Image (cartoon, rainbow, N blue to C red; front, side):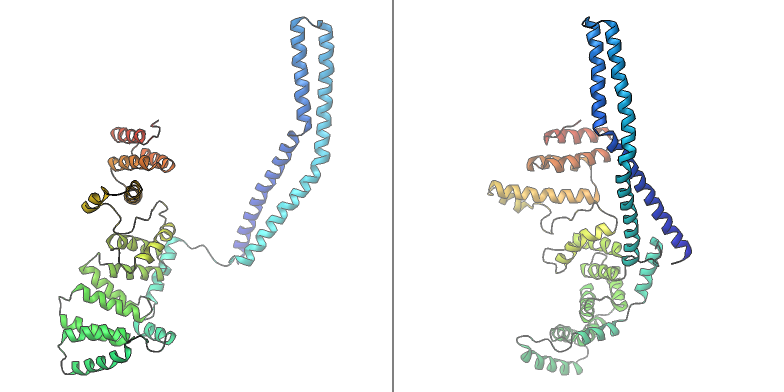
Length: 414
């Protein structure tokens, strides 16, 4: 740690100490003001007021009233003088205890910082963090090195029922393709069975031959399958070669789910979770209920949102639960009240997530408020109402619509 860094840290410690010491002094004054002296003062003030009332009613003569008031005032002065001495006499002990506590807290804080913290670690601005992430991305191992590392970590063939029958069939297919190098169907079948046997490199080579035979207009699905095979061979670590395949896929299909998934993994592995959040958020919108990555990205998205500076993000309902189809509406006629309530709750959650993440017209906010009223989610509805009023503060017509919906939901519109 440099001298400048030590001086800066010492300055911070002194500032914290000053704040704590002021709190100690203030606490001492507050304690003195709350002791029995204050209660006695209130009694004497009440006595003065009572003497004035008796004088006004003619109960006591004026000279007696004056003498009594002087006596009460003398006692007030004595009490005040005694109280000042008590504060000085009794305040030193607690102050010493509190001062010792302040010093102990500061010393412990310094010790913990040097023990747990990283004194030599400098501040890292956002641009520098992004630059380091870019460097980490550039320094990644290649596909071959990653495949070798994964094979070393997980050696041996995959044992499964039927392997003994599959191996000779795959061997026959390999031999047949030697004399049929243009057989695209044969190579496609070979890639699928090589990966079943755990022969990832052989599967990748077969799929590369499929792509080569497909010509310039290779289907995106074939490229996506190649990407899957390459990722399986590296244990899910995205190599530069995989990144090239991702870019090729996204040029043809910007919403391709497999490319979005592995692109998100790439950025997560190289220090850019904000880009992972952006990509996986899109991926969630284009996924189907049976997508193999769905559970993973739904578990990751809330944390990625916090890291990426999007605390208002709300995870949408799973695909397939965003809203009722015509068949759902027809089926709802035969639902029990509980089942119908559950369906409405699912629709509301979908609308809530969309408005929180993307915004929407005042009609949608009004609809959400009314639905919240039906579900009796009053506290959540109140928060939504305040947010809607803030968003549409400059639109009188929108505010009127939202306030009307708030009344319908049982909320005050004021």
